[in-house]
Length: 144
Image (tube, rainbow, N blue to C red; front, side, top):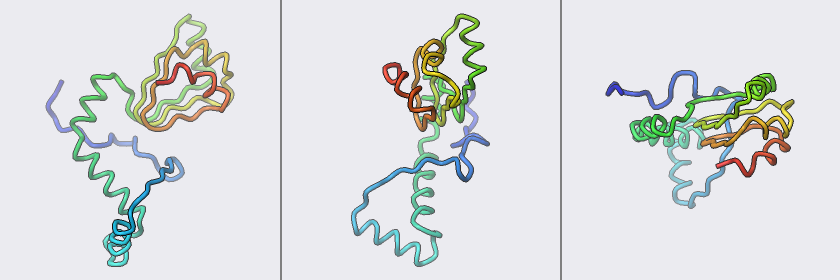
């Protein structure tokens, strides 16, 4: 392992427009008012800009912890997609997958629940998981 600085987010792993997930937060009226004041004073373009900046600053503050945990837990950092062909190849080899992703894991919409169950032993996603409702239901017991 090297002691070189690790970027907070590897190049290409931060989502582009249309590739983001929506979250909801509750704030007290004083906090919200202070955010609105900073927006009015031109420090930020809007509330979302301030919140994204604050989150990125916190993630940058904890870069080493995130990096060390990704390495220790052997997580795939970024996006990982599984097509029907990928999973059929896994099944043909008689193997199964243990999927561990920090970011986005996705399974193609044409993957059947039976194929997913035959090829995915376990699934752990920190971030977002995209798959058909049927595949998500089938894998629910294998998801951590």
